[in-house]
View: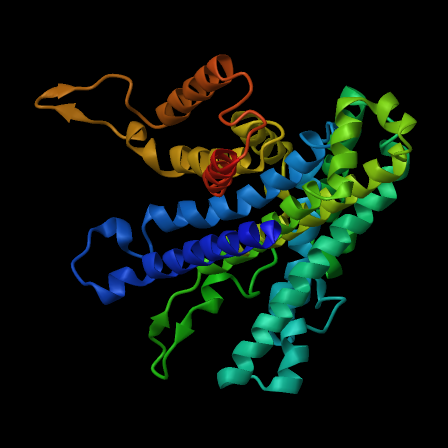
Length: 399
């Protein structure tokens, strides 16, 4: 009964959040004359989409680094696998010759969207159902492919510790990026060129007969998928497997003495983390509307790692909060520092293109120096905790 009392209000809170996202995205159409920040093309929605994608990848990295104690830097590589898997499997067959024109077509002539279109139809409601099912299956397979590669490299790599593990996984990601740009694999990966033409977040907007958008869902979709994945990760962390991960992080010798299979649980954590990183890669491809290997550099992994450190290693909610703050600062709030400004006739010094990143770096340094454990440390935001405390106090008074 206690678990149900905690579970259902949590679901209600998540549902309210998703409804709020839908209302926020469509409020400009319902209420004319609102500020530009509520327009669908404003930086607000760009930040929300990118932060939703990055928060999933950050939480997946935190599962491995923060909760299992494995220092891996291969996240960008697994995102790359997820992005390409999704892109290859969802580009419509009719567009593949255009996308792969340098290589005379794609080695995979089918598309999941077309495959479901044969069953449900390609127009109207049937077309929408086909696209949703095709994209969903491709996103799941994106995670499966990333998890499969993690399982393969886990055998040699997970026997390493600390910095050696980080170097090995970073090397794997860089090798993977080079291989995917290899022209010999052009019929599959399109070589060094980008793959585009697949469904993106905007494809889920509901349009009328005249083509005008009736209901925008391009921000809701990444929020919904990310929320479901993070809930699954939280459930895993709070399960017996999660407790085994934490015991390995705290003391491997003691964990093994208690009967926990170190290599098996490390492999499990590595594969699950990579699965969700692959899903995040598919969502990133949908966000940028293309898949190209050169985008998944080590810099992306360092960004995700920085977010995890800022939020707090071992805190899921810390990773989510840090992601939205990081993306908002880098993509929106500090943008004014890149343009010249005048106070009357006096030109404010230093404000020029690139100064934003200088200030952003200083802000990050301050956070890391004065919040060594991150914003949240290893704590979690639990909106239900106050209710639990009140119940305990009441029980104490009755006794």
